[in-house]
Length: 176
Image 1: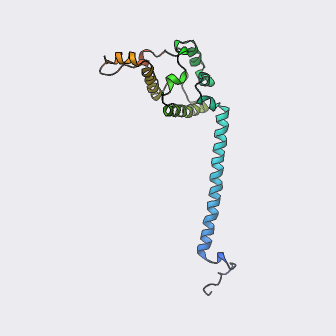
Image 2: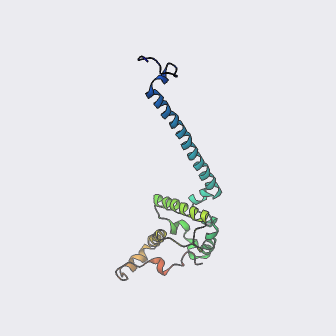
């Protein structure tokens, strides 16, 4: 075979060089990878969208306390809150999310993710229990709204530490 002549069994043109054939094979694999990746992303978006609509996800972006009762495990907490003194001055987000916009929606997203996993798999404690992270958020909310009282109390630390509002007042907001 002379230089410039096509290899045996290949027509003249782009397929007559081994590098061109290798490049064509890579491009074919890349096309299939693109189709596969697009299918996976599309399926995830479809399932996620369906789940968001089914679980009334948009309601969790509001301040409406009824959204917190979408899950049956929160019904008793919601009913107890409706009968509490805090019902007149605070909604769920006032006590259970930070008071800055980014912190609020980060907490809502994190909790939404964990709640959806727990409720989908059935892997949660009933009655529902607050996590250490959410306990800290709630403690900070108490201290934010009641800062004058807290500052007076914090002048006298207990064992060198500030007292925890929710340690003594665990039933405030919704005693169940």
